[in-house]
Each structure stands twice: as structure tokens, then as C-alpha cells.
Length: 112
Image (cartoon, rainbow, N blue to C red; front, side):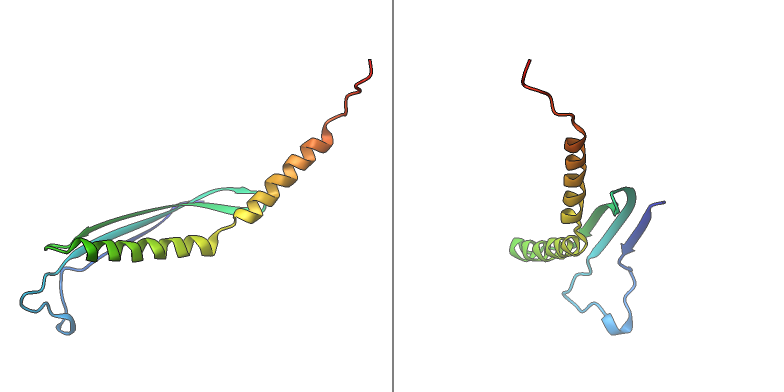
């Protein structure tokens, strides 16, 4: 398969509905998601995901406000990861592979 890229940017224009008021600052954000298909593990499909984001607040933002927003962003990313997590299925497949290998080993006699 091929990569899927989602590229999201703010628009510089503002509409009548969302005018920038005096004293406000219009920030900028650009985010790119890259989804790369990987070989499956057993029957479980695999995808590598890269997430890159650049934010220019274009003004002074208090550290506490930025930390709060970053926590919300990373929380959303972790929630997404939890929804698609297949760790248990992959672990079960790998355990079965180990069991099959152990079964194929010929027992050696301890007697000489």
C-alpha cells in the first residue's frame, strides 16, 4: 500500500462571522499526519503514524495556558491510540509462534 497524508493548516483569511477583534491576536497552526502501512503481524494489520504540528501563537501566551492546551492535544492523540490498539492480539499471535517452536524441538535424552 501507499502512505496517506493528512495536511491541515489554518487559513489566513477570516470570515465576517469570525472577525479578529481589536486587541486579539490571530495565531497559526499547521499539522501533518502521515499513515504508513506496515507488514501485518499474523492477521493484525499494522500502520506507523507520524504526527507533526507547528503552532505560532503570534503573541504572548501564558505558560499555564500552553501547558493546558498541550495536555489536551496529547490526551486526544493517546485516546486515538487506545481505540486502535491491537497489542493483545499481537501478543497472542507471538505467544502462539513461540509455542509452535517449542513443540517442534526434539527432547534430548539425559541418559548417556
